[in-house]
Amino acid sequence: MHAYLLTIFRSIRTNLSKLFSIIVIMLLGIAFVSGLGTLSPMIDNSFGNELRRENVPDLILKSSSTTGFADEDDNGIIDIVEDLLSSRLATSAQGLTMLDSSMFSSMGYDMGFSSDMPLTRFYGIPDDMTIAPVRAVEGRMPVKSNEVAVERMRSDMVTYKVGDTIDLGDVLGTKTVVGIVSNPLNFSRYEELDLINMEEIKQIVYMRQQDLAMSIELVPGISMEVQFPTTDLYVTLRGANEYTYFTGSYIDFVKGEQEKIESLLGDKYGEIHYLTLEENMSYAYIVNYTDKIDIIALLFPIFFIAVAALVVSTTMTRMVEEERSIIGCYRSLGVTDSRIKLKYMLLSLFCGILALIVGTIVGVYSLPMAIYPAFETTFFCPEMVNLMNPLFGLVCGILMILIVLLVTYRVVRGFLKSSPADLLQPLAPKSGKKILFERLPLWRILPFRYKSTIRNLCRYKKNLIMTILSVAGSTALVFCGFAIIDVANALPPVDYPGLTDTIVPIAIVIILFAIFLSIFVIYNLTNLNIEERKREIATLKVLGYRNKEVVLYIYREIMIMAGLGLILGLPIGVSLMAIILWLLDFGRLGSIAVSTYFLTLALVLAFILVTDALLLRKILKVDMTNSLKSVD
Image (cartoon, rainbow, N blue to C red):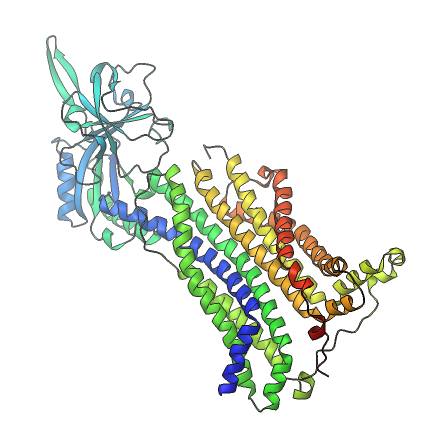
């Protein structure tokens, strides 16, 4: 048992570089998956906690009557609140006035708005507002009839400072801005739309509810102050706090309770529109963005996992092949087949678990922290919560580990079918045979170095396919990252406002991870190529090949395989991008700049050259004596 454990540790030491590359490649894939997979839940949790803290309404009842919520006794709002509370459907309800400047004329009021007055939304706020209370972030809330507050700056809205005056027409007059405020229902930085013409609101004004009024002359010399009606009723539903805001179950619950309230109130209070958070523009933006993030978080990890699993499986296969003589020794010494399989399965499992732990930690903490600040360009972001969701990364990581374990098991099982005597012999090289290129007239004039390169490529088809697919996958990922940036930048602002600002950081993360993945893929495959061909390299040196010729002999094959991978990677990337755009429902392939194609090729090729340059010393330092020793 001691000797058996000793050989395991010796295998780890001997194959340290291979095991390290396996860990890093798996780690990159798992970190990427974990990070993107937790980004959407983290955004939902951060904004959801803020909405809960600010006690936003689950349902808004909006009256379509010019008299608001009023019945024949003119106390409709009081009756509605009593009905809701006594039915135990709601825990609280509170009314306020919300009118757009375009609505006053439809209600029969001439407010004397000037033609150049920006489209304005007016809020009349009660003094004791407890549901979604408006808070001053600068200055204070209005306490006098000649004071107003304005909403914090949003895209293309009129800018005010505390102390400025604002002209609100002949009836409401000129007011003094005493505060800049935040409305917890308006956390997007983009404009709201008015309810009549669906045009962009350019300024949002808050005043005391009793001050949102007009004077009506009853008879000459005698006038009466008339307050505008309560138009909105904010309602918090009983049991809603058991649900998370940005989930389908929450929306289903609210809609179910809405049906009960509709049945309870009937039509005795006039026509009422029921608005859930789904109809809130800021909420809709968050849902839209996180849905797109979820699509990216689903598609790209599949590709990352496929590339990583392919390379890792190749590495484990070759590592087991190199230890065929050790397997032969095990069998000749009476070590059971199950224990031999266990050794290599444990090595694979060790790499996978280490990559899973480190990759998950790195992913769920680094990527959201790097990407979340980008949402500040689109939203007034609350503090990011640390409630991470590593489930997606864990599932994908475990899937990758299972794939590697399965490949390792099958490779070892294949070797165990051979006798110990055969395993103790070096693996016989593949027998050469005439290839298709040799039948072409061009073959006769090719220099020998190119003939040998082509023969080797066709001879080791498995290596050829693995390298091409790995490089193609990495190239496709880099291309998609740049393509997403092109498409996002080409979108008109009116089509997913602010989407560019939030999607570009994700695309940059994709590019960086894809580049790192391509570096380690090329490094790993090139390193394996050198390791398994040490005898060939040593033979070339003995035959008088100079260092430059030996390096070119090896790298010529690698560059051809990498070049084929680059060429194949672009159409794969375009196809993947077409699927992404179709699922995201924005942009088109025509928005991808021609320079992106060349930039992708140049970038991946540059890293291939740099990576191969790092392995140059390994080729030159091959020990001819040890490499040519025979175990016959």
